[in-house]
Amino acid sequence: MSTVAGILNDYETIRADQEAFYRDLHAHPELSHEEVRTADEVARRLKAWGFEVHVGVGGTGVVGILRNGDGATVLMRADMDALPIGEATGAAYASTVDAVMHACGHDVHVACLLGAARLLSSHRDAWQGTVVALFQPAEETGDGARGMLDDGLAGIIPKPDVALAQHVLPGAAGTVLTRPGPVLSSADSVRITVHGRGGHGSMPQKTVDPVVLAALIVVRLQTIVAREIAPTEPAVLTVGSIRAGSKSNIIPDEAVLELNLRTYTEQTRRHMLASIERIARGESLASGSPREPEIEVYDSFPLTENDGAVTARVAVAFAEHFGADSLPMELQTASEDFSDVPRALGVPYTYWSIGGTDPDAWAKAVRDGTVFSTIPANHSPLFLPVMQPTLETGTAALVVAAGAWLAPGSE
Image (cartoon, rainbow, N blue to C red; front, side):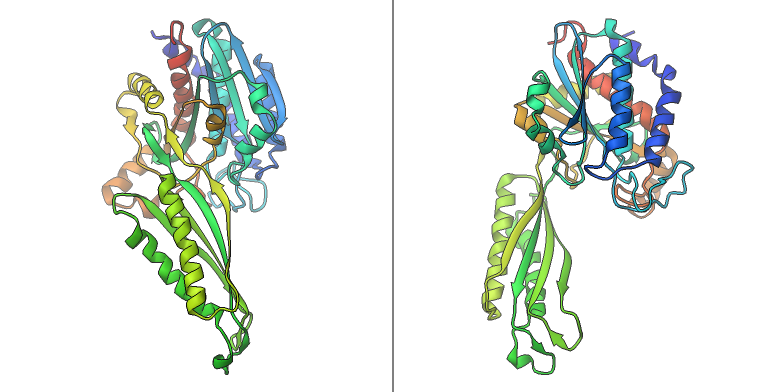
């Protein structure tokens, strides 16, 4: 029996407590920067298992450090925050907080990292090195990782040799998926305010209509990905909001557009941002706008680009443990701020996914070609990973990945 297998053979002793914790956490979600109860529950458990615990890092972040002799230092991260969404799953342990739920699976991430921390703590004879369990607030707002760094994270923890993280996604529960290189896109939101000259709807000749200007900008923006980005380079641009006017017969003075873009290289990101500015300014000029538009970039998320060597090492460990349930991961258009931490610390990292969908339901949806229409995705009010084997798989994945560096004799 391998070292990791010996640790995971003890999973049944923690299953009931982990499931109870997960149900409680799912029922008591907390929004970004408000994860007080969650942080308290996490810190209490880590202390009981012998971790050196630091609380309040970056506001509500928690860091646990478990030193176990010479060896590598492995950082494992879970995000803790929920979303402003009303739950519609009907689960017995559904959210008790109005219009707030764990619709992205962060409750799964917390429960799995705690499970891994507990198993590693109770089997210190099976590994050597240092484990850093990082519970991050405010991933959904994109500033939680930077907040922990700004609050002195680098001075609290020993420098890791590797950083690891995972996310539950639609897919057969029990599977783990890895991918080298870019895996999650960078993301930027852009707010464009264009200006017109308001007036009576019956006398348009006396106005500059910002609604028409905004519409022209929307149409032109669609040509960026279609005509300026190579077909082999993934990119997404979405106009999610247009606000203008107050009444049908009043031409307003301004219109506000909000858009979001996802890219996988810094070159494409810079090109798209420059094109957005060019189009907004050009269409404003062509429409006779009395003022140049204001353009604000906000809510930016970094690219998640997995280290090739680290990912290969984890993939080998996953293949040995999970067998046929270790699969390649498709490129994702979602975005995350986890990579801010290893990038700032100068540490290689990898980020993988675990499936959270009932395997039979997933198999049927794949056969029927109805995955997108019948399987709730993250951020849906219906998103609810099956408790098992999701929790066991996520716990095992963290232990297996960490074990690739912490096993006696590993470098």
